[in-house]
Image (cartoon, rainbow, N blue to C red; front, side):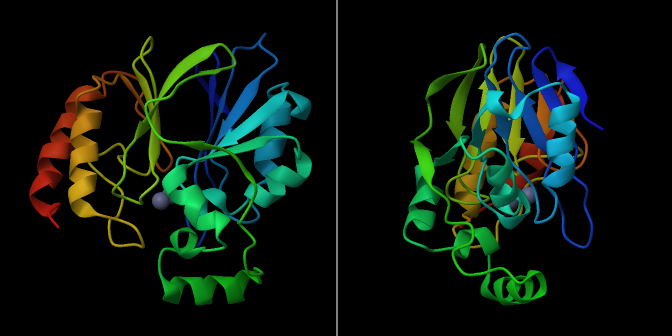
Length: 243
Ligand SMILES: [Zn+2]
Ligand SMILES: [Zn+2]
């Protein structure tokens, strides 16, 4: 079930099965008529999320964009399903990963070639299925207004090259994608375009933000005073994150 985190930010939890399914966040002040979806989920996991959006009373024509924290399969898997229901929604992706998709290169989506052949056969996914039309490529440091709620785009490479986080300073709220989770966990750093030393620097920059509300794309979320946990997680992982 969708849960309101703060005014204008809803959480639609992922439904993991054999493979993980990313959470989705829905952003936009209720009266704004401008809503954004952050991340989608695994193949087949679009339908229930669309029903949840409907249940929030948000008409699909008010969903203006889908922003990807990165393009791993468990996040982008049901993007095509969402776009067939909401074809006018713009897709925004960081340039480091948009670049792969624009040239028909899905190596970041699947992360490694063994997983790619296994999953494409199992789900019967055609080639270039995820090479969607990216309407806006992000660089990091943009100040964006999402339905009257202000966010700064923060480029946090390491888990993959084009990972971003979205930071709302007013609430000290951070959507962290797969870079850092609750409970001392961080994103894996062994897949295509990952870089452990970059991940360490990204984690350190996240620790500097002074985050209260941590909204990752898997598992638990943290609704208050996340900063000490984040600091501890970053310090604990730093010695392992060397190139
Ligand atoms: Zn990921
Ligand atoms: Zn993920």
